[in-house]
Image (cartoon, rainbow, N blue to C red; front, side, top):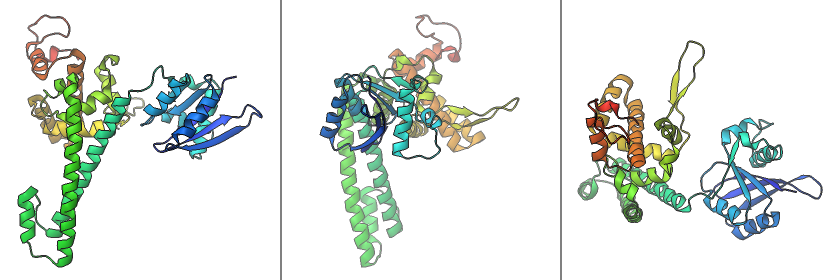
Length: 354
């Protein structure tokens, strides 16, 4: 008899709901992820016929590997679809795990989940953690700079700014606070450089990252984040699938003759969307800059930023899919070179199919 286990997975803990074979009652367990030995012992005891279900979430790679090493089946579902299937509007970890268990036992999980044939890429998961760490440290550093500027009431810009702030007349307490912030900013800068050095080391080994960095506005962090978010781009048949995967696709809420296009779905990686937005604003690509300016005048800067990020993502997708540099990508558009045809036509730039 197969053992079904519903898992409500969180970064530091997981709550399980499973049926006890002895009496058919639903039992619950909770594991902290620091207790790796206890987690391994429990799942090994369940046997290879166990079917485990959980929601799609981050930091799953080590859990997937643990299950696959023991020959178990893992099904990963869309959190929104699973939530809609819940019998109760009340929500907590035990109820979430029980909902997943119900779907597994009713054998209808196929409508809500896909079975993983192999574990996720551990290297991509680790590098994604580095991207997040770099963004977090950068945010803390920026907050420290704003605090210094607020206390000293002068702009802070590196060493020169530090000298200016020291010349400002302040009280003893203010000098102490500013001094402590300087120490914090120096430490955060050191940490940022350490993370970026590790990412640069990884990028030098990654041919796809070197390819993307030929595109104006795409730097080290952006390139590595994109390739490890998208994975193998050959699995996407159309550009719309890539846009939806990252969460930059606009949601449509239409009824009858009324057509409404709302905000973006935000389904994918929040970090990838943020980095694409920053890169789109800083990009020196003439077409993207022109497009950003036009949309900004008509719809405002926030919407222009999202629209430009979407165009930048599509450019990167085509470059990765065809294995071409930015120079070749631009040349194809300028001469109207059809994808995969090997022929140059007399058609304008927009004839390039993506």
